[in-house]
Amino acid sequence: MMKKKEHKECMSALLPIRDTLDVIGGKWKILILISIWEGNKHFREIERSIPKLSTKVLSKELKDMEENKLITRTVLNGFPVRTEYAPTEYSKTLKKVILELYNWGVNHRKKIFA
Amino acid sequence: MMKKKEHKECMSALLPIRDTLDVIGGKWKILILISIWEGNKHFREIERSIPKLSTKVLSKELKDMEENKLITRTVLNGFPVRTEYAPTEYSKTLKKVILELYNWGVNHRKKIFA
DNA sequence: ATTAGTGATTACCTTTTGGTAACTGATTAC
DNA sequence: GTAATCAGTTACCAAAAGGTAATCACTAAT
Image 1 (cartoon, rainbow over the protein chains, first blue to last red):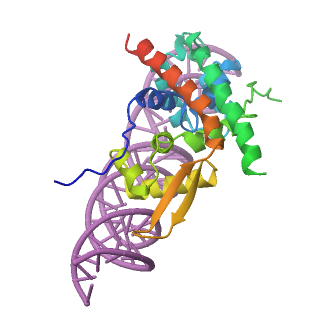
Image 2: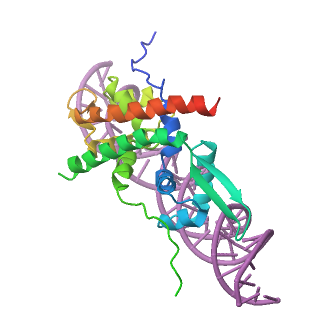
Image 3: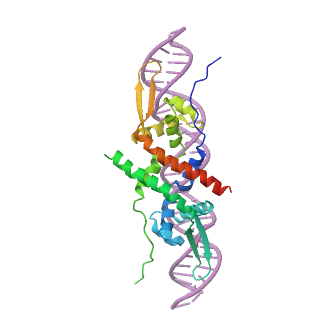
């Protein structure tokens, strides 16, 4: 009988972390969220507030964020059809997380470029 | 003269967040870090502790993590050349961040699948 | 010399992601 | 009817990420 090599499995409890990273990870999601928090409401407004962000990606990300209940989408009838995006109360629960990411990042820059 | 459409720019202060996500984002980095925190020291050990992780990706991620001072790499001479990976004290500063990601993720699962 | 184990690297291919630009459809001002 | 604006969508292509398998260098036992 071969003795099986020992190594510790460590996959449990990883799903929630993965979930969070799916929601706020990637290049644009936090930027878009912050843009909306800052008061940008309309598609073009958000688009213009984030250099290099394409309509295609914005469109996709907004859908994701709506599914994740971070924003609401309301279509207003009238002169040029306008859509209003607004942050949910729930989205604010991310502020603590984002602050942690920010703080660690600030410190890390110091550490790495020291 | 056209009046320029107003929209709030919001790019400042985003770099540190991006930095943090570069360090811990992606599919594998947190898993690898946790594996090493759990006590796995050697390449094969880490590899086997994380199903579906390929040598190529592990190799790349370990390099990144060394650059970011999250782990140390020591080559030990002797019967089959062994390399030991160990977590740095500095890596532990990530625990708070990861805990926040975890907590938010747990709550988010409840929110979304409710 | 051959075989085996460890820690990788490389070449090759597939999948995913992202960017560009054109286009739709609605409405209103001219 | 023409142009312009808003909110997207679609088709097409390019770049990045990821997976598989083969290979390499080193050592040690046989």
